[in-house]
Length: 497
Image 1 (cartoon, rainbow, N blue to C red):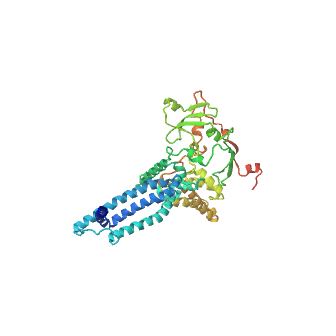
Image 2 (cartoon, helix red, strand yellow):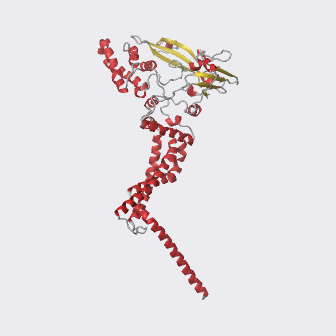
Image 3 (cartoon, rainbow, N blue to C red):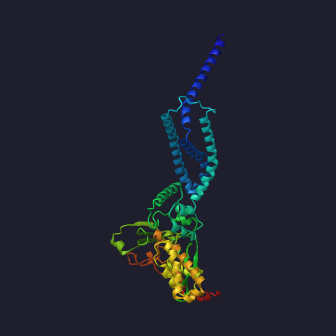
């Protein structure tokens, strides 16, 4: 009897517990019911979609593509910047939509006193559940594809050069450079997530400047925040490689009626490799270190410290630097970019650009006086790209029509084609709207167009005992031919054509 009563008592107790749990669940459902009802509005649905998208990306897409962050820096910005913002915005929109709908219904006195319990027969609950399931599926399928596609596009040169920044001069120069198949981010963004985020934060500030049109013109060369060349250049190039001697042939055309062609031939002693001499060996060879102090543009170098392979140290300084009691400016260790200033964004001077165009035939050498007249036209200052596009071809056509009508009559097509060649030279190197003119961006490789090598090797810096930095031409190159007539040097080598 007692056992039966205990059993009956336990069943009663269990029933009471179940009823209590059901009541608790019902209370919870009754608390959620008005939220589900009021969340049935467009604003809250947008918030739900954003929160869902962020959650799907974090839970499903991030683990799949996280390893690509080292190669695609925009992934880091996307996951650490864009996704949290979307999540936060969604979390704001959901309660905002609930609040606005509740206030609207109270004003109209249409809000129900009792809300239908949560269940599949509740229309608001059913629509909300279907929306969440559909949004999750859509975000998994579409978000996974487009997030990766977007990241790849955002790391492309087209995005960097035409979409994100006002980089027209640099982008055009990049397309005509030896590095045109190297993505911008490979050189301009350092390794590691911190560098990626920092670079992209800087990029965002540039986007804002572009939107509000308050960026400097011309865009200054970022000499102070460029990555070290050992991280950029040396990931592909090896300065210690034994390069030896390279032959360089420079074409020149005289400003006479025949556009007389001549050649300068240089044997460039590049060097490199253990025990060798030459440009690379003297500057970046194993055991060699060069430190220097310069102005903000690194075009005026006041102090140099040279440490050779034996460890011997010698310092050179300008008179002005010594008289200023050695007041330090920026001090840095020389690397590739101090000479190869613009490896991917090179702008040429008119003389060099026109010589190359004449050698390639884009400007025709059979036109008398084309070298002289072409230079005069290129050096004119034009107010805009549109003005240059109109006046440059017209100026050359007018020259031959008025000064040499017989030549124009027989070579009109050649004149027109050469006029287009002159415009191409100008459009490649001068950008009036960006205030980029001939020589705006110095190129320090060599010393024919800018100071270049002579920033150090021009005799301005001396040691305490009066020595100056070596300026022996033959240390860097041997002059095999100096402005010799076309064909003479080739014939000397036994080459005919």
